[in-house]
Image (cartoon, rainbow, N blue to C red; front, top):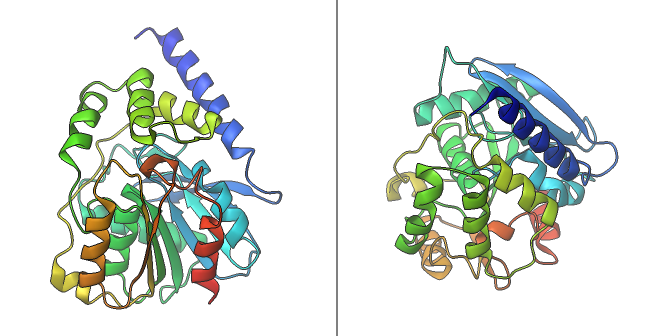
Length: 290
């Protein structure tokens, strides 16, 4: 691709990113923090001395997608939304130390929490959507002393696998990502549901801007899940085409002692958290304040 075209694409992506970032509430700040794996973009909101909560987006969604949750949680907590290294967004991986394993991912999150000033004993709340829910769960299992309460939104690869139908639809985006293919996957999965149009544009444009292959790993074993002691809220998109939400909910209830679960009937996988049903963000906030 010609240099001029690349520069134009990045300028357009930057404008789309800023358009969604502008939806965050007043008092929001941004910072780029150093970690051993690269510079990490963080969007923060809420009182500086309030209990911290880390917000981890789904693949390609960026930290900007959490503006509704940040507004709901920001009255009582200091929220930090993260652009995952290697994903679209404004974090910049260090090519000398690529993340390749789950241990790398949890090490990066630990270093990021250090940079944010979170004590080694925490606790820090974790909220994740989709791939971000997998990251949150992996960190909670690896660092049970530092990790506090968990809220997982339509989590993927945490309790069950993906729907074969979704994988077939996602394959073209994985093999040859383009904005058109990213938008087509999102439109198919949301199936007519209302989606924030500016965020849809950001997601589509970011489809070809990944700088590293996403790190993946096996789902946690039943034994590891049974050892999870953090109060956990798991919300499922009732219209999700990524997996069978009712089957995943049954698995959570069987595997995680005391987990609170609910199915949001009108939600699809990709409408969380940007265009979540009314009351969703408030429910997440209550989980961290009860």
